[in-house]
Length: 164
Image (tube, rainbow, N blue to C red):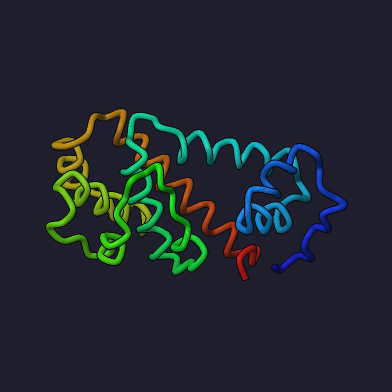
C-alpha cells in the first residue's frame, strides 16, 4: 500500500462489516478507510450497482467484472468468484476473446464493455446498435455504470496499492 495501512484499532465502526468480509474487504478498508464516510458511500454504491440484481442480470455484471479484472491484470479480482452470478469458470479464460460459447448478447456486452473501458472515443454507434439488438436502453445505461464503476475502482485500488 502506498499509504500506511490503517490499524484495525483505528477502524470507524461503520466500516467493521466490510473489514470482516474477507481479505479483499480488509485490504480495501485498511488502504482507504481514512475517509470512512466516503469509503462507506463508495462501498454502498458498489453493492447497489454491481452486486444487486438490476436492469442487468448478475451474470452479465459478473462477465463485465471478470473482463475488466483481466484487463487490469488484478489477480485478486480474477480469483473472486460470485457463485450467485452462475458464470462457469471455464468460460472466463476466454473472456478477453469471447468465442461461440458466449451468446451474441454476451459478446455484444463484452465488446461494449471493453470499448467503454478503453476510452469513450472507442465506443461508436455500431456498439450501441449491437447492444440494442439484445438489451434495453435501461440495461445499456446500467452496463455503462458497471463498467465505469470498475474502471474507477481499479484506478483507485491500483493507484493506492491496495492489493500490492
